[in-house]
Length: 291
Image 1 (cartoon, one colour):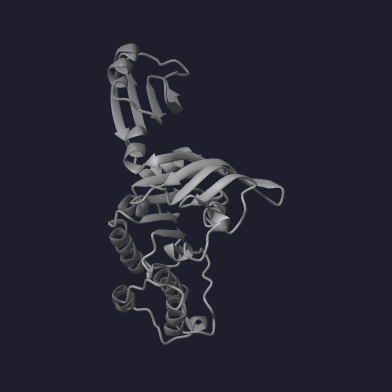
Image 2: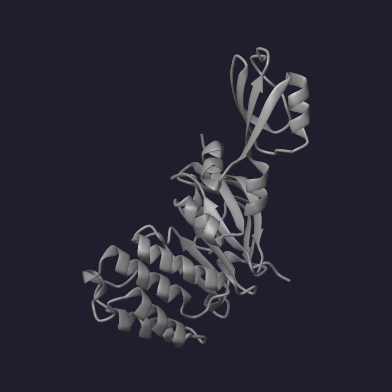
């Protein structure tokens, strides 16, 4: 099966700055990938490169085995995209946008369109120029998913949505993700949303992927370990996967990025210590990978 997205050592330079640094990854059907990273980490540039909006300086980005910059008119309807800033036409209302988009897509899910217009309370009679940011965002999302795309790419899709609208959108994203033939990539600053819908995580830092893989595996690999020793601990400890440590006398707080439960008896015996293990949530992991 050809991967909807395949990245091979992708590098991209913009204005003399290397924004993407040798990224290799792929997205398979049924995967929902959360793209996380600080502002300036390269998330939007990566999404734009995946979609063929810019040429990689080195490496290649492919959609269904074809260079993203070379996809044809038959492939483009397989994509749905919500940019960080909408590209709606100010003088057209919601209905006019729908009619325009529908003309370009052979597949059109009118039942879904009608359902979401009613549930999301999109003011379809209003021109875009008079809609709020949240209303415009809802319309942008609707236009991106109305044709049931095989690959849906969303750049900060919930940034302008209120909590109720965000919950409604995430529920719709869960429904989309339930289709094993479809794939989703979405970037977000709201880490709590990721755990509700994603099964894969790409963690970007300074233009590179600091982590890529299953969300559950990431959460199982990070742990904060507390040592309560009977004697003063050494000023520094060395263990596989130990990425951060804070030691004060007989107490230590250790953070592991590849934690193994087999270390518990080892730590207890070597340091004659009581050992407490706390597995980290995604938000804490994000903070550990982005100090």
